[in-house]
Amino acid sequence: MNSSSLAIDVAGLRKSYGDKLVLDGIDLKVAEGTIFSLLGPNGAGKTTVVQILSTLITADAGEIRVAGHELAGDPEAVRAAIGVTGQFSAVDGLLTGAENLIMMADLNHLGRQEGRRRAAELLEQFDLVEAGKKLAMTYSGGMKRRLDLAMTLVGSPRIIFLDEPTTGLDPRSRHRMWQLVRELVAGGVTVLLTTQYLDEADELADQIAVLDHGRLVAQGTPAELKRLAPGGHIRLRFNAPDQFALAAQVLPTGSRDDESLVLQVPNDGSVQSLRSLLARIDDASLQVDELTVHTPDLDDVFFAVTGQPTKQSTDAEKAMSR
Image (cartoon, rainbow, N blue to C red; front, top):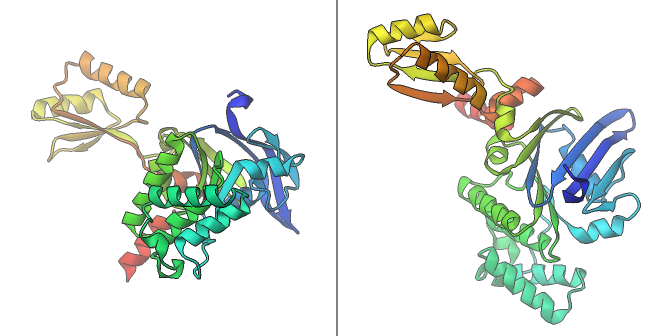
C-alpha cells in the first residue's frame, strides 16, 4: 500500500506502564477513506492505541504518521486533522445540544457566524434539530452519543477515532450510529473504530485487526478473518437417496445426515476451494438439490485467535443463566 494513500501508518508501536507491557510492537496501516476496526477484549490495549494516535499520551517506541504528519515531530498538525469520540461522553449536560456544538466551534476558532452555521448544519445532519434546544442532560443514551459524534465533527476532521462508540446503546441507536459512520466515510473521512462487538466490526469495517494482550494476533478483511476459524463447510442437500449415497462416497470428508439427505463438507469458503468442490460434483455427475456455503462468524475467529469468548458471547451466556 502506497504510504501517501495512508491516513495512519504505524510501525513497532510499544507502550508500557511500569512493568506492565500494554502494547508490544504494533503495526497498523489504515487507508484513507476507509473504516479500520481494532477489535479486542477489555485490557487488550485498544484505548491505549487511540490515546497515542490522538496525541493524548506518548509512545515508548515506534514510528507513527497520522494524516501524513510525524506524530512525534508535529503533534499540532496531527491534532488539526483528527477528531476523537471517546468511551465516555464529552457532552456538557448543563448546556443545550446547540450550545455544546457552539462551544466546540469556539474551541476550534470558527468565529461566531461560522460556528452557529456549523452547529445548525450538524444538528440537522444528526437529526437533533428539536433536541438541540433542550439541555443535554435530558437526552437518551443514543442522542448523547450522536451529539458527542457531532461535537467531534465541528472542526471537519479528516480522521476520526471512535473508541467503543456504541457501548450501552439499544439496537436502534446502534444502527443509527452505524448509518452515520457510513455517511461520514462516504464523504471521504477515515474512521478508526475500536469495539468489543463482533457484529459491529463485521458490519462496518473494511479491515479488522484483532488485538490481544498488546499484540496483533490477526488482521484482514472480515471475510479473510473468518477463514482463520474452523467450522466452515458446504452444505449439500439431495432429493434422491442414491445421489446422497454416491456423494458420500465421492466426498468422504463430509459428515452425513441420512434422515435429511444432507452432506456437510469442510470448506474454508474461498472461491478456489469452492470451485474445486464444484468440479468434483460435476465430474461425478451428482445432482445436488441445494448448495449453501457456511463460513464461521467473527465470534469463532475471535475465540480461535485469542482463546477468549467475545463480549457479546459472554453477555448472551449470562442472560441465559439468569
